[in-house]
Length: 277
Image 1 (cartoon, rainbow, N blue to C red):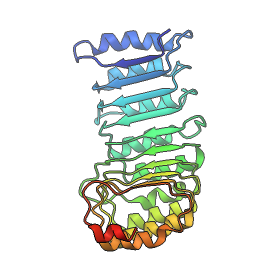
Image 2 (image 1 turned 90 degrees about the vertical axis):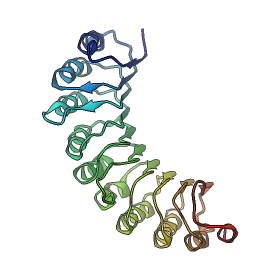
Image 3 (image 1 turned 60 degrees about the vertical axis):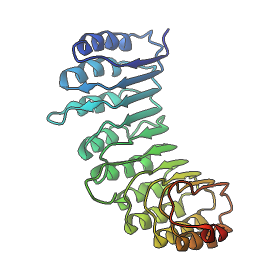
Image 4 (image 1 turned 180 degrees about the horizontal axis):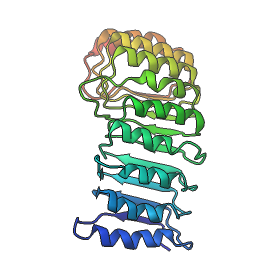
């Protein structure tokens, strides 16, 4: 009657332990609701064993892969993608710091389309940028996802291109969007602002540690003014200067739904900037 299980095994015992876990997952009497696979290097063989159980399981609501690595030289992630299409009870899915490549993100995301129970998707610490963001745009349009975490995408020296995500974001039912720790150029901020301005479902937006200059703050301020429903904004450590804060503050009084504004961390404004609030 175990309902929550965290799996972590040394390389020497991983295969035997996964066989036991998979057999338990496949049992019709399984009551497991939360499964976390931690710190595991999943080659094709190990993933095949795990997916044999996952594809037959009808009880798991929350599935997490934390600091686990997927093989890049074969179709290991496709085995998991095929399992997702059969996991009809899945509501929360996380790939936290798994270093998934863009193509792997794309394939896994597309396999989730049609799962109308999926409410939360966490992709923090991966490399979702071109193909992955396009797939996410489709997923957000088709699925009722409420929480999306795209924090700290490891895009090699480039800005995250949010124009690929914005069409789906504008039409989605998202309530919480996490983009913290990403490099967002002005074009991406503009795409994000346009989508946020149209999406009145959004309540929480995290942009912590995303560098935001004066122009970015103007775009975001205009978006929040049009949106009117965002309740919490996190600008922690964004390096906002006096001019940026002042331009944003000029639009603040028209953000009717805003209840919390986080300006903590390392910022470039001083007491004069704060006076504008």
